[in-house]
Length: 316
Image 1 (spheres, rainbow, N blue to C red):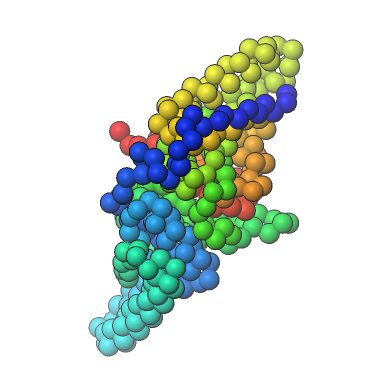
Image 2: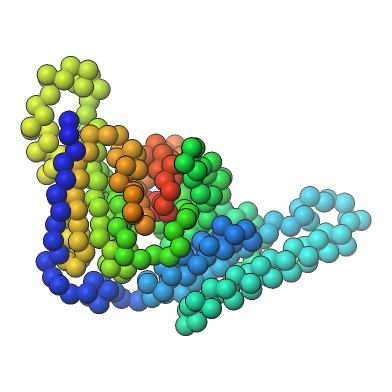
């Protein structure tokens, strides 16, 4: 099969950053800080995102104190001293990051918080009242995938809001946003997040739907059993139907649509040249599936060289 592409021209010439969907958000953009250069750059990206969403920024540093390692009452003073030292170091790091961010966004409301619990637990808890959670990831080398850290994976698995695994891109801008479309509730959540982001930053969207996701393995083994024309028509209908509510809601966002016969993760990765963000939906319909990320999300997280936004369907 061959990939199929088409583009859609905006139905209005209005500046998308001045549209009717540019309302101020009340929930902050939350970003995890550990003092590394990666987390500092992630904070700068998060600050630009908060500015675009017209909300505040919350910088969070986790410090699980060494006091938890001691049980003997005789070392209470050591525990207290260690905890105080960690607290002071965390506050110094947060103040430095806040100052760096404020230089570029002087009007942005920036809060800092030191939490005495594992980073993933703190960020998951804060995600219940957040617009986005941002975590820094190492860059992907040309020769190999990045080994995504456990904090990123856990937050992406369990957060209540979209999670951005940041890498490489300096700030949100007008470069394309790539989003996976599969017709599921998680896919709908990804579309909602992608279109709002694109609307706020004046970005076009590339919507990608994989044929491979809907093909039966036995049928593929005997290709002449497949009515390829009917399949293409059905998959095209799924893609356009999934997009319709969002193109109606955000008429100023330019959309290019693509059918691809690659597996979903690879179909997305193949479209990232020149993109600033890739958005994926992650399914967690059962307690078991909630414990792990889906194969598409994992593939994109491990191999994408641009920030990855992971979205979950709303819990009903």
